[in-house]
Image (tube, rainbow, N blue to C red; front, top):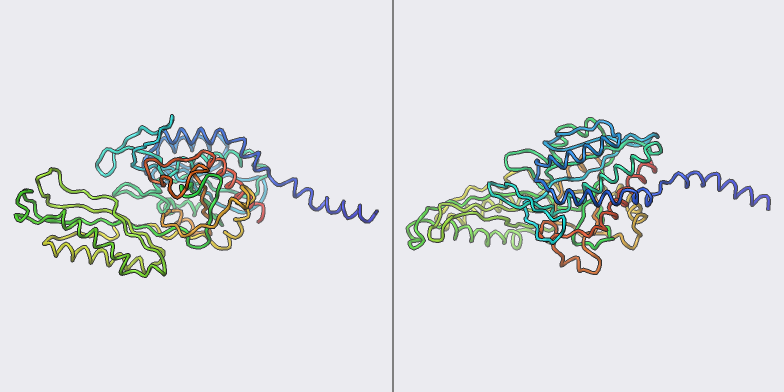
Amino acid sequence: MRRLLLVSALAAALCGPAAAQAPDVEALASAVDAKVQAWRRDIHQHPELGNREVRTAKLVADHLRALGFEDVRTGIATTGVTAVLRGGKPGPRIAVRADMDALPVTERNDLPFASKATSTFRGETVGVMHACGHDAHTGILMGVAEALASMKAELPGEILFIFQPAEEGPPDGEDGGADEMLKQGIFERFKPEAVFGLHVFSTLNAGTVGWRSGPAMAASDRFNIVVKGRQTHGSRPWGGVDPIVAAADIIGTTQTIVSRRQNISKQPVVVSYGAIKGGIRYNIIPDSVELVGTIRTFDEGMRQAVFADLKNLSEHVAAAHGATVVAQVPDTKGNPVTVNHPALTARMVPSLETAVGAENVVEMDLNMGAEDFSYYAREVPGFFFFVGATPKGQDALKAPSNHSPEFFLDETALKVGTRTMLQVLLDYQRME
């Protein structure tokens, strides 16, 4: 009996203090849940396009300063904010990122905090909406910042908080996004050993968290094709060269790049058109038509082949109509593939399971969406996961998708996001 008591006492001595030191993630998150919801609603009601997130950036910076964060910097990559939380105990240096920009989308949700904002995009007046959920990302990370600041003395290591503008891409002619944040030295001033991020996602129900090891999200590239014809009266099409008909033929024929020229049994490929602009009046055939779109790939060889095929095909189809094209493929620097570091992913998936239960954590298929988080994850090991946004009981595969004017966030996703990110960050710091 005496020996049993001694063994029990030794076990308590070894295990008890460690268990006592484990932070109570539920308590930390519960303390900020109401604030996270309020921040998200406020940001949702006041959305700002990329490189224009002035109000949002001020809200974030003021909050971080009030929490006592160090080295709070603003104006990075135009409107980005970074700050450092230094824990009271030794430990690793890591980074965590949220994006702040909205989209040129007119909201169609009937919410008391729905966006009524408008702005100018590509020379046109547009509605502005957080149709991708970046308002949730910002609110969640503000909550995570407050929760971790409340236990600063017990926190191991240091955490760089990144609030990034222009994830959806900067305005034409401007630089921005993750690549520009890195160019302006955020990882030179603070050298993290790992970086973390999350994204709310319509194809998962609220309460569910998704992950994928290795390549997770596609490379994304934009293209711009201007089809040049010769203007004429609509009643005399033979008097000119119709760029609208040529453009329509280009759109249809270029779909064969995916269906007939790429081995999609190897990796998926997407070529999509997002805008067509040409003409002004019903009875005038215009001089030109502009086509813009996106290319999504996972393989660099396939990516370069699509670039060449799209340019070559558009030029020859236009020539068959007597038209010409100016094809910029790609027209800007695109985002590389988002890759989750396999060892880091294996290490952090148990944290997701701890936060929401293993039954609510799913491994996801390749995602043709893109993320400029990929730039951070090229510099240091990265882990990027997905938080379900569609209400339980609704078919998530049929729900309005991210970027839709009807994209809807079940606000329980905010609680899930706060808890999972806290668990991931704390577990990483404590396991080092």
